[in-house]
Length: 86
Image (cartoon, rainbow, N blue to C red; front, side):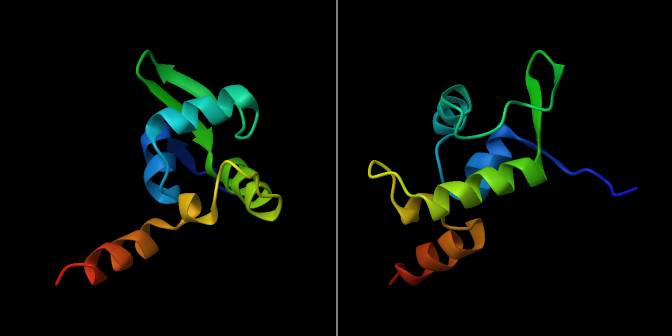
C-alpha cells in the first residue's frame, strides 16, 4: 500500500508561490480539493497528490485572473529571487 503524503496550507502556499489566503479562497471556490483532515483547531492537512492534480488542472486550463507566475515551484522562485540580487 502506498504511503499518503500530506500538506498543510502554508506548505501549499510556499510550494506553489501563492498566498496563504489564496489557498483557503481556492478551496472555498473548488479550485483546490477540500482538506483531507482537520487534525486540531489549527492544523488542517490536504492529500498532496490531490493538490498536485488540482494545480495541474489550473495549469492546463488557465483562468485570466491568474498567471503562470503564481504557480512557480518554490525552487524556481528561490533561483529567480537570488538572480535579482546584484
